[in-house]
Amino acid sequence: MRITVIEHEAEAGLGHLGGWLGLPCDVVRPYLGEEIPGRARDGLIVLGGEAAAWEDERFPWQPATRDLLRRSVADGTPTLAICLGAQLMTMACGGTVERGGAGLEVGACEVTALPAAASDPLLSGVGTAVAVQYHRDAITRLPDGAVPLLTGTRYPHQAYRLGRAAWAVQFHPEATPEIFAAWTSGSGLADVRELNDAVRTAAAEMAATWRPMTEAFARIVTERARTADSDVARIVRETARTADPV
Image (cartoon, rainbow, N blue to C red; front, side, top):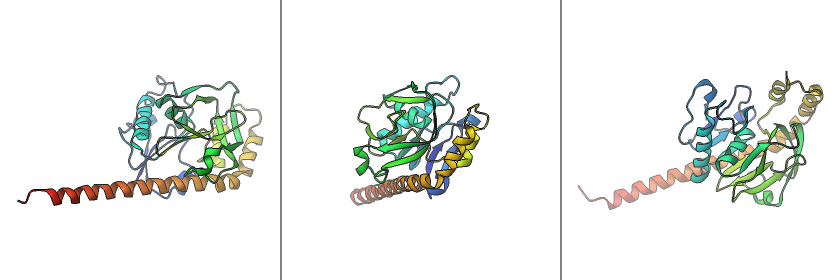
């Protein structure tokens, strides 16, 4: 069982998720010229990055990434789309992403569960939680059929589920304090030290929330792969039984 990971830039890698998933990952780095695959393996993670989800001229792999996301949602491939990944999934599936009217959302910020989260396979344990944020663009209209799961004060669409097994989260469950500090370094933000300190202080609390979510996603990947293998084996057996004798 393997998870396909789309990494948009070197500074926005798997972070915490690399250890929490417990499954091998095939990391695709299109910024280094690696080709976006037509289909994901047993699961798909699309990470964040500085791009706007509509900046295809600057980031020419984005149309292929949207195609991959659209196909994975349709196929029921377990998918976790993070920040830019969430915005690409939103656009790919008919929703809207725009420059955020409330400005930059950055730092350790609260997100709050909506009623549907109580029965969600990934987010059922989340009430009000802290998450790392770093985005100026916002999901302003969800795709048709999306189930809103988490909301926030500055931007309401913080997490949703689409189809059988695809989740989009606007925040960064993968971001360690070190990753966040790398993002703020040279950013020109006036309160970098305070932002970094807040993320560092909340690190244990965030890990206690987002590690179980990540582990739940890994279980879904595993269960789906085992089910698919069982289905293939059943088809092979049935074909063998009904085949004409030689």
